Length: 180
Image (cartoon, rainbow, N blue to C red; front, side, top):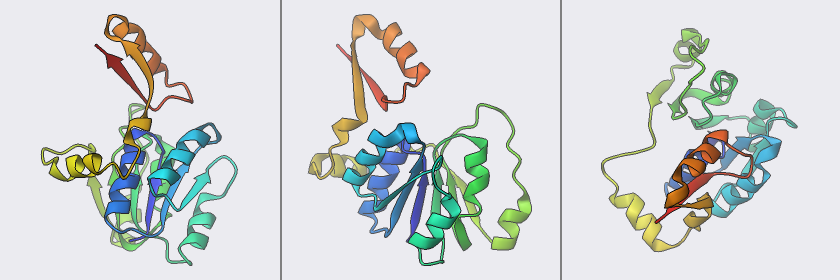
């Protein structure tokens, strides 16, 4: 499958690994200029291309990278309404959209015709499963530097500070770990 992952955060990076393990080609990851370090990690995990949404026309680039065929699968991980709306223009007819981002801003204006006319399959996904055997196998294989997703560490006694830091979402942060 041709896969586009919208958002290079922890969920997007895990999606890169899942796509790579599934044999996807190409794997395309989008993000913003501030995500340069996340783009680098996405490529370490197996992404073929990255697109800076602030500098490039995403739909045009996806068309180029897929030889005009668009994506078989788009995984929306940003939780940004504009990102979700743009996803529909990146998917081929009868393709699939996984919505993994959560939209705290409230309602998102999605036209059902976008789904109907392309006959899309739209699925929600929290990015977590009770069946973790495959994930454990991938982690234990050490094929991917998964530990790089943890960009900041705080001692347990500074848990509140660590949580505040994580919630502020500085550009260089992916995941924060508390160390006992």
